[in-house]
Length: 214
Image (cartoon, helix red, strand yellow):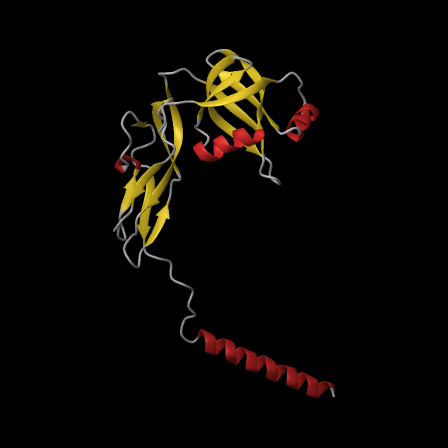
């Protein structure tokens, strides 16, 4: 968690439309919209490399302090749209926020440790919804699966949350489930022999047909 916003310089966006957006991207910029707190949506441009690094290192819940020619606004990254071919970020939406307020966010859940031998781990939920102070949003939540055996589970209620973070999701939400491994498909006894017999019978029929044609 961090209690400091990430500084991000931006420029006001004065041109709109698909053509203007394409020109901005070619110039290494990303069109961004800031909304929330009753403010009129603000259209800005940010540096693609700088913004991409923030998303990569801090996730989509990162808190940034946007500086548009000296006018500063605290905001949280809400959504990013990536190009399906280049994977570059084409557009982003930011939520205007204020220090001291709480927001509901989805936090990635990752697991660490080794489960019991002969068992298989299934992760049913990749994220968990929580409420947290905007300046203390966890980047991820780690759960230990060390020594878990077949039949063991971890639900949202079992997750230990950082101080000041409260659960919003259903406490019974299944996150981790340890199950019996799926067995590989093995032919039942007699199936292989039946296939072989069928092949021999087919070959015999082909020979008889050939003889009749002659």
